[in-house]
Image: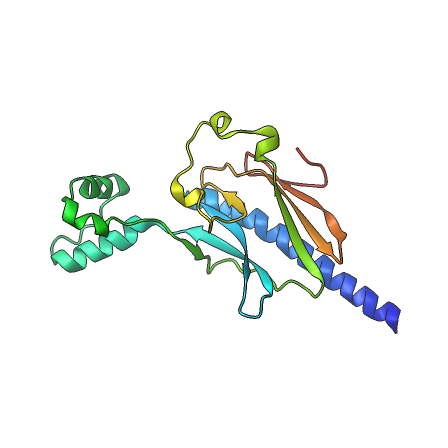
Length: 192
């Protein structure tokens, strides 16, 4: 009987690992296709259980445009990001509180299964080892450096913050180490 339970548990853990790797590959493609930052975040629920979720950095211009059309009652012709940026820059100081800011929101298109009992994720950044921000050639915006930033991050440009992800069951590795490379690709087993 105990052999049956152990193998069932092992299969659940392996299924979670495979679902996670498939989902991360999909998120990478979705982020680049939309040209929108996405990430994997670990969030605790009310019972203190940690669950992995996929998040997307919202596009604040869409919400701003809808609010502007409704409040002005005027032109409902969609504006592109450049036009909206120009509108925002020309706003007077008293309207500065209307300037939209991006927020990390749960991505409805990608769902991850619950962590099986005894399974945890360990995520370690590799950016300090191999790559610095100056070498990446861009400055991180505040929404990439605040406390609520996802632990695994794709920038929407095809690049990602390099990390390793380990799926652990009672401190033992399930599957192989997953490495997210700086170019956004995923490597199973071998690191950078």
